[in-house]
Image 1 (tube, helix red, strand yellow):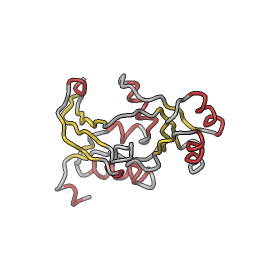
Image 2: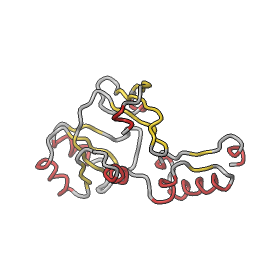
Image 3: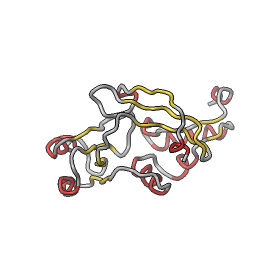
Image 4: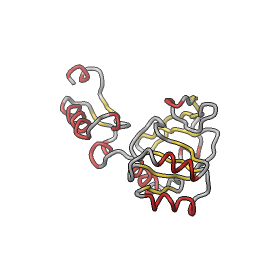
Length: 178
């Protein structure tokens, strides 16, 4: 940490899933603060464990629309997906990033196959939203400062760089500002 003290003045924690235990993550936050490195996203470091369910609740609270989502807690819940959703759907882990274990399922059979690889209570299913790209907008103190367009790799729907997506700089639109 003493080396970092002279190189950085702020830390932004994006994803704690790279740490095997929450305590390691929280220890790093405490160590950074101890040497005077500010933590940019204190709500992440102080009030919740990073997961997609929390992200969706925060989006809902901010009136940002999200795809219809179901938490898969049992086989019974999974069986109801066929009645409640139109295919394709997306299944993804609650904890995770980089597009790992995220799959588009075009049939109930494909959904079952993917769900069998997971523990109950660790995945969500969402409506699949067809899009040629999506955007990541950097917002600080409620102000949009920059944006990139994320374009999936050929024959993939995920817009993660680890999945081969391309990022292009783009102009911030009025919709992004709002």
